[in-house]
Image (cartoon, rainbow, N blue to C red; front, side):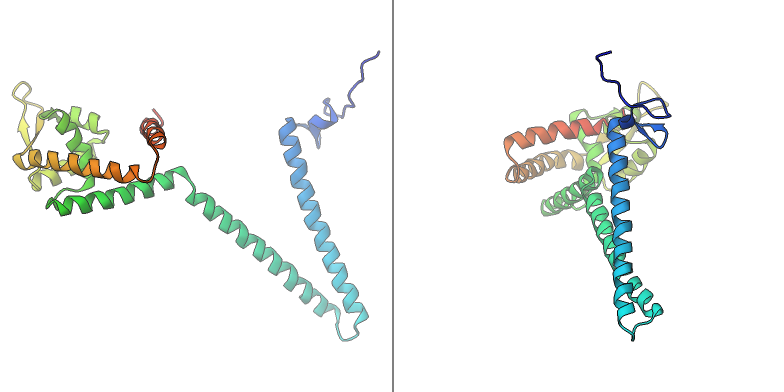
Length: 234
């Protein structure tokens, strides 16, 4: 008897949990109310604007009803267009803050600097994309193609394309597996082995360049986050 009962609507729930006969979560209810308030405010603003122009037109004998409507449309449509442009600019800004976009652009800039350093070291034939295959071979030479693709995290089609390019540039060589005639192994050529020390030096310089922009703590966080993103979706 002493407990205060909540007012209920036809949907069977408290008024604060119900909108237009549909039960809604508290947060969604508040968001819906705010949206409707904003729409109502815009509608009332439109009415007030139109009525004001009409009053001005009725008091001025030189302004007819068609001119009143034209003035209203000019003011209202220009305001609507301005709001639309602001929304488009905000949307574009949000897209540029997307994690995927930022990662892609950072990777693009990294590869540009990487290739410039390779060219300075007289290794014009080496493209940054070859790193996915070269790094596993630097760690263990003579890997089977299947194992190499697994460590490089590349599809068979991409592996085939890159290997053909790298073979043509004299970086790697394909040999038949002595223990399995159906399989092939990929080995670094002499030219590829010479590039190993150059790549380590360039990558160290690149890390130092990043270290000038980021603190040690930020670098540790960056490496941890990138490792997590490498396994995204697994």
